Length: 252
Image (cartoon, rainbow, N blue to C red; front, side, top):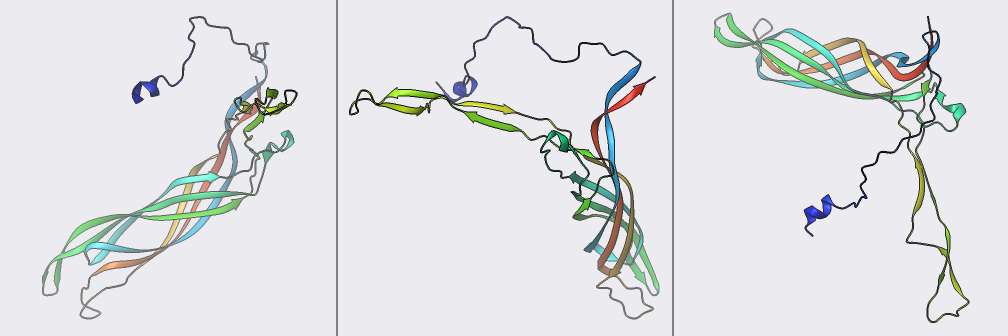
């Protein structure tokens, strides 16, 4: 048998055209419009102002006469709340503190003038732009205002059956091989499909300081150019941490 046929037929199943009825243990009483209902909705666990500091060296592809404008945008690519698993049914919810891992970048579009012609004291220039991403990554410890539903751990338990087997030639007939059977494997396992906390970016604020590091000119009154700047930024942003949970509400 070829390798392709072996992969396609690696499991031999006894197929049947019959469809059996599945049993369930759900509530058999219909839900009426009045009374309490259970909804699964995003629950806000907390909102946090996070501050991080960045330093970056930016190089321009053309000589820069002056910077005209800088447009900035904070982008979050990862926001992950790390919580432990629930030990017992009574510890299924917790407020922390828990570590919050955040990763992202500041997208900057820098508009600048680059000289293209000089005539005496006059300088003709062209407007160009440079877009750069300044990355950042940090972690902070947060205490939740509303408890998070902690994940339930998966379980896996193996068990064996006793078996007495003949020892074969060379052993007395009344002696037996007393142990479990290595040709059998028995296991009970359970999997929990938990709700993962997620984040929303609410607001951001950037305080920046840019300075040229290689500006050249013939004097303080001469129009000089540079190609490198040293940038320092303090980035503050607000993130909300949420999780889908089951909430009881009163139906009117």
